[in-house]
Image 1 (tube, rainbow, N blue to C red):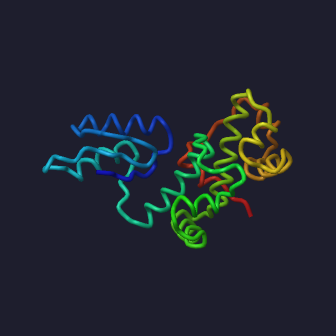
Image 2: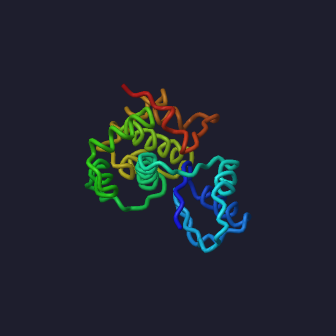
Length: 195
């Protein structure tokens, strides 16, 4: 049986979900971002117990079809930007990639995402790219031109301009600051306000 789970955005989330579900006696077969496969042979399957167990860790079971689609969109984007899954071709834009992965027209995906998340898919992608840029800059091992290439920007100038619009300072100023912090991946969408 597969369970779709909201707010699973990192490897730590995968570990926590597995540990919590196994702690309540479930046989967990597979855990990946946004989804858990469990061995469902117990006739006393306690859906409410699973829901409560996940909620105390900040996760939610997804039962609505439209919410499922939105979560899948977010996970496809996060996987490509933060976890380098490599499912999207370098020459492919995100709209074509999401159409291919979901099987829905982009206009439908865009409208659904905007109405649910109160931001556009494009702004969500930008927010994720900027947060990934911040993480790479704080790490200090990668140049801005390498970051621009990794995140499919047309140029370093394009990345720099977008970074400054979102963060308020240039990448070099950001990198020189000592008090920089990252936003959790699942909260990134709330911090973008591009015109």
